[in-house]
Figure (tube, rainbow, N blue to C red):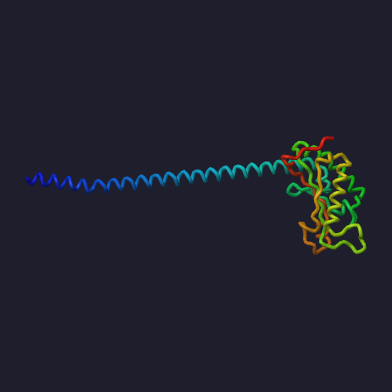
Length: 220
């Protein structure tokens, strides 16, 4: 065997030893590329989900803002007169405007106020097919001794909410559009440490709420 043959054989041996190394390196690079692509796809999917969630939240806030503006417009008269308040879509009426202390009997001025609210609320609710939740609240003071009409503040708030609900229906609100709820001394809007705070907590709130998808209005 000549020296040239020996060199050729040695070169062939070197190539045979190097080839597996390059094959492993190629497999490794392919695996890394595949992993990178998977990670990139995953990041893109997460970003798309975040964008979709953000768009949904923005849309929800826009709808809520539109509802608030529409409700303010519908109640422009009572709001301007200071007879009601509007906070986060909840129409507030002081309990002192509607009822004497520890009573569920409507004052005449209170009934007139409710009567004035029915037409704009009917239009607002009808345009959106919403319902009206009437909620009663009290301060944290116990029912006065000797008052046998109410068991406790929850009972008082329930009877007041029912009285307002019935008054709205009597003044023309369709019965299937309104319902009552009671919270007693829960969910105060002010501290019960002063008479002013307790007066703010004695209130009735009315809030438009979406109708349940499976709820159907009763036939008149």
